[in-house]
Amino acid sequence: MAFDLPLARACLEASSRAYAQDNPGAINTKLAHALVVDSETDRGRSPSAAATFHDARIIAFRGSANLRDWLTDGTILRERLPDRAEIHLGFYTAYQSIADRILTSAAAKDGSPIYLTGHSLGGALAVLAAWHLARHFIHITGIYTFGQPRVGDPFFASDCQALFGEKHYRLINDLDLVPRLPALASHYRHSGHRVYITGPRAVPGSQQPGHVHDPRILVDPSPITVLAHELSSLYHAWRTHDYFDSLQDHSLAEYQSALAPCSLPVAA
Image 1 (cartoon, rainbow, N blue to C red):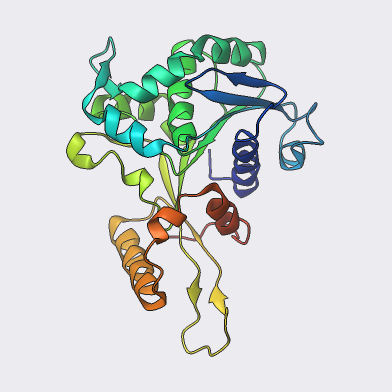
Image 2 (image 1 turned 90 degrees about the vertical axis):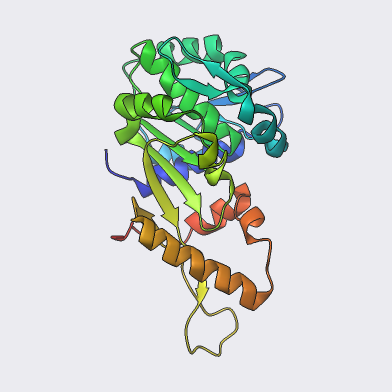
């Protein structure tokens, strides 16, 4: 499954809606929140989904305002799975609180396209949902996550890669720090395709205020390419005295702003 820009935008729209209160179709507990969007019956609320999908179901997981607590409290504490893989205890506990209802929702639509998505913590829950549903032989059509932290150890990442890695796209907005957490030293790893959104940059030699390059999408860029763009972003932040780019880049609004002007992905 190739990266699909309209699909990414539709999933981002659903991820944004998952943050709203009192959503019709919401699955809520104290620890986790998910929104079920059906493209055919929810056209007014999700125009991008209606335009992009036919008879599809999107399950969007909401992020958390307290992501820092999730990342620090659960870094040492892990849940060991039956196949010896280990995952972040906080993420696992949150997903388990809605796991049965997610399974029921997905099973009711089995045979039609099912997409999983989420921003921040919501992206981590989307990965756990994909792993859970795959273990119950429910076909997932695609997974698009935004600013998703690492979820588990190398064994878990390898399992996810084998089950659905080719249909999972992890979007990272420029200097967003959260996808780099928990740190590699904690033995957490990612799976799926890395999709890097480069930040807008001033056009060299231009004297026009606000004259910038549009963001670009790089699918599975090489580490050297990522490093070059990150150094460019850091230099831009230093030149503009905007030292909080890594925090700003994680916000849902920044992902929306970055993805909106993007054209088709370019070769990295």
